[in-house]
Image 1 (cartoon, rainbow, N blue to C red):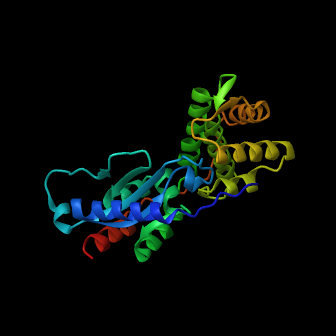
Image 2: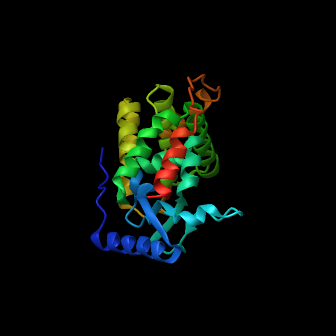
Image 3: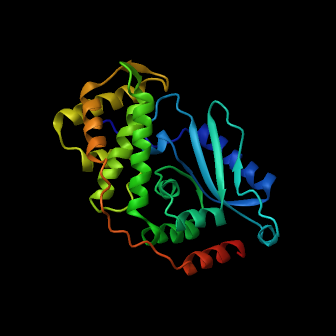
Amino acid sequence: MMEQDYCIDSTVQRRIKLALAEVEARYQVKVLYACESGSRGWGFASPDSDYDVRFLYVHRPEWYLRVEPQRDVIELPIDDELDVCGWEWRKALCLLKRANPTLLEWLDSPIVYQEDREITSELRAAVPTWFSPTKARWHYLSMARKNFRGYLQEETVRLKKYFYVLRPLLAVRWIEAGKGMPPMRFSQLLASKVDEPQLLAEINQLLEIKQRSGEAQYGPRREYIHKFITHMLNALDNAAVLPDSHATDDTMLDTLLYKVVTA
């Protein structure tokens, strides 16, 4: 398999650092964690893929002492290279409590631009407590179905969309195997969950095309992969019964919220 290079060009890194510094100054917040969340983090970026920068931030203590709820998302204008968006710390902890797979993916990103290591270590340590196999399975299966039906039904298809179906399907396999939260890296999922030689060869060939072509690259439908996806979606139609010992005690999250806000 052609392994994706997770190194980010130094010029782009500086631009991202400046964007995060702008966020801190403009909104009077502290960025606790910033990572790559899209195809560059998954490991199948095209040469012209943008940078999907996602971050977690905390306000000054007085922000949390207002009667009316305040906006808990910061979004910078999207340009042709950067897509920068962040979630406020209390929102992030609420999403962790709800076992939000997107947040859990961010915490496993192989590309980290900025972080408070003490805080993010505590947050990552809490993931197994709150992870829900049932919610994660539903999230990834819904994603696979939506992308398959929406983008891969014609004779000529947008090639990148195969990975937006394959990756969540392999994530479902990972979850059903009882292995916890799926890794963000596509290469890990593929190595662990696909061992059929022809399928592996076709996926790797498609991956090489994706990594050297533009985001908008179209091509003929890949019939062998198409058949695999159809078979998997049909097989997964019946909901699996998964052990789901989801936590209910908020004490740990309340403590982490207080610690960070009052630091």
